[in-house]
Length: 449
Image (cartoon, rainbow, N blue to C red; front, side, top):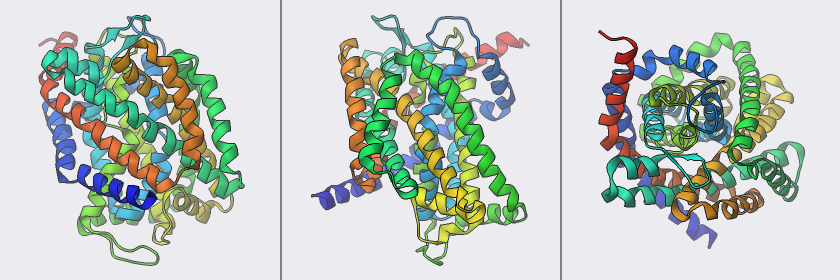
């Protein structure tokens, strides 16, 4: 039975992440980048300034712009930054990293557009909460004739959340703690469920408060550990970068325990793991940004695009450099085990603890952030009465995720990512004139000719 399910998921993943999806992801990202005249790349310093000022904000909304980004980052900085990067390299070779970078560069425009539309078309629910995201900007932006597409996104996301944001994370944590500290999964799962329950039962504000405290700490701590490894091998960094770029266009030959990878494998796994990591195009992050206290969609869009920059161009790049510099990527290992081997080869026994505790903390915050995404999608479909039931189902799924087979969980997450992305990317393309108009108006008002 398990083999049949795995075969079906492999087939579905290959179909969903085939050329049409890659063309759609890249196409929408490139189109938005060009339509915005490379604004995400030009305005990155301004975006960081807005983020700093966004720690305190006025306007309608439930959390500050800073908290909105931290909540979104809590969901995006997860196992994808450690295990996901390693898996991409193990399956697609070092060239997969290059395609992760490209996905992120065009993904900044995608994430910007998502947040702009989320704030522009958000609503206030019967409980007084500001709610938004693809399902709302599809319904309110495209009109009633497209309501079915918004419902499709919400349905896919409600279920997908249990994969990408819950079971994958719990499974990776259980696996890492068992391999490093011999902690059995039957302890990890329930303990993680209790910790998550203590936060998510308090609603968005508690999630945002915890995320705002944990995300900067964990990101900086992991940055320091990974940067120290890269610094110790600084002479080899240029060669590692050349290997990443050349492999993206020539493929990677077999060597050691590495079976070799064609260019298509580098593209496929680089894009898939890149999207899994930074979530640009999935439509998840705008659900958090819709709750920001702001009356200006463009400002929140600028803050939102930093999520992709920080997640992939900073955190994922550091993980990738550690793996490539160490040479561990030819060992045949994959996932978190590969990342641990890479860190351990430079830092000694302490390296595996960097990966284990980093992964555990990243995954914990991801479960918090995605609980909010799934909850809002369930609310869209079934009303506010579904919120408490969804939270308890979410908590119950964590131990299950810690116990199931890892390969099945990753495959299911890949499939659900693609199904979520389709309605959102269609909506972004159709609503892009609104994004361009709001952007022009905002910057013209600030700097009139």
